[in-house]
Length: 420
Image 1 (cartoon, helix red, strand yellow):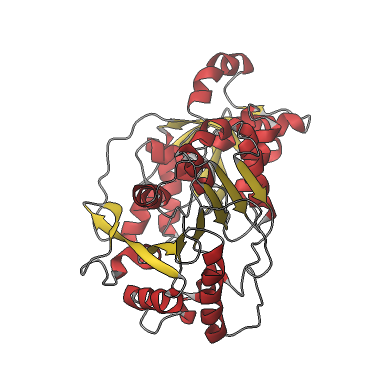
Image 2 (cartoon, rainbow, N blue to C red):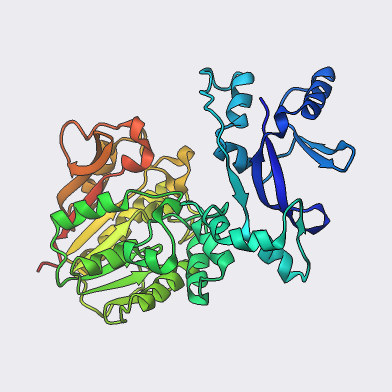
């Protein structure tokens, strides 16, 4: 299988291609010579051949098994050499369906910007600047980065992102192992020119939020969000009617992201207060009356992200219970979710068999003097959708097909000490 493209614009000194179009050169007699050459030396695999033409000859200047940006061009042309390679090597068993090729174009605006910033000029091949500027609007429509999963790069190269947007995006995507971990609050997406397809590790935030607001009255309540990450639940609860959310987030970049996001959304400090610290369960004093504490997937990071890193797992299990009970006189309700694996390490499972029943018994036995379990939400997969339903004899069973995260129950606890 073969594919060819005609390069129109290239960065100077033989660097990256800026514009190209699909071609029929691979059907020519000249190209057949190169194909025969590779067959004669028993080459097998993908190779990119660069050919230059002069008035008399076509000559090969490079044969490179490493592909680069315009490989997108042959995919867009429906000549998927990657699938063909995988089939040839037995990686995929079913022979790919090879469709009739179609004309395709490639363009990388950022390549122009990069070149001009260096005070250099691009090279044109059998193509003119006049023709290029006439076609520029159509080229921008098919820019390599003008796709759902990379639109932010395209907009950045166009220079339409202001500094605040750039700063917010940088804060969201960088910072720690929990960066790019949580869905972006929907009203921020237009301002950030992002889409939630960019979240590589979403944790079913909407499904969990739906279960929470269906089972506890949020309206007019003050919420303490411990471990806010990038603020999805904080902003969503404000939208659902919470009076105020106090966010404790020890990752400084995430805390700054929430603060800047609140400013973008014109949400004042009377609605969202951000404390850029880890919540200290022994010393932190909250002066506001707190109705609900949100403690989602924090405690199994004790001794890792926060707390004494030298303690053993038996100590940690006791300390987790102490930290839950510590909150009993500080709020009326606690929404709790806990991971099965200490520090996120599968070799450090907090429970012998890693079952929901073990976790539920652990929470009940450890907190029964301070908390009453009002409800437990369990993730279920119904017709390819995830929902959280109340605990029952079926969903209490561990479902390995869902993965560890979706086996984590959501606990709704009512304080026996701090009653409304």
